[in-house]
Length: 350
Image (tube, rainbow, N blue to C red):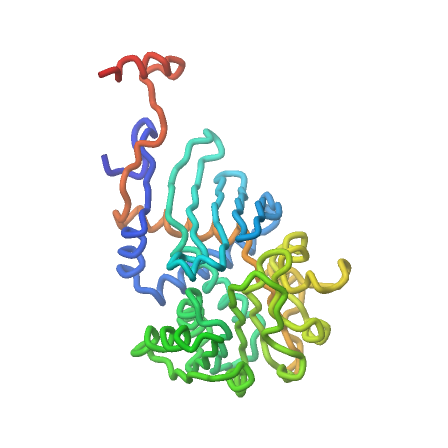
């Protein structure tokens, strides 16, 4: 069976890692990022329709496992995601994820998907979508501090959505920088490998920090950041993990996704609980100002929010209507008579 709407809903479309990669390459990475950013922006425009709650997190000494749920009243979605920085030492991914969409009216699942790759794409698409609204006009240079699994996606999203042409890379591990630079060869970008964070941010109008260590860190100090830049701080995503010196935050106009979550997980966990921030959906809808001067420092304290995952899953589901990159998963018991679940089990007896 190979249909998105089976007659009795017994089969659920499942997008495996293999099929996700096929779908991305069929559409093209940069076009995928452009399209995905539009879905995210559209959902941010209807932000007030969504159920919103900080993600449900289970923390351990090794990392965190989280559930990220939301609903727009018609479709329910959630993502399971982990963050285990030490995994890289064992040859494992720092972040893995999967997600599900369900029909609110019936409660039936309508799509299950891998989200390790999709999360990287949605994070990059969100960063670039926000930068489109906040970064200096005609910005050409992006500095990426932290060149791990997210870095190439960030670079390509900024190129495709914001017109970035130059990328300056830095990581404490030079092998990570070389990996990123090699992967971005022949992508239409001018790449500079840097040996210090200070040299990486020289001349950059946009600075993205995406480090993985679960600790209070100071990737950027106050004296490193000049006037007029836009900062995407996307690595701080749990309590006890930050990337920016507090004084940078105090000099910046700060934009966030969902304050109750960001105040716990983002760089603003360093600030007073009532420190003013602007929700980015308000900028997108015109209810709040974004960048207001050339010398202003704008800072997106992005920790990732469930609506972005919902948008990504919604985008993928729409693509499956015309691109059959999925398998049917026998996931929902479907007896001939809805009350006869035991009879269905009995008839399946060997």
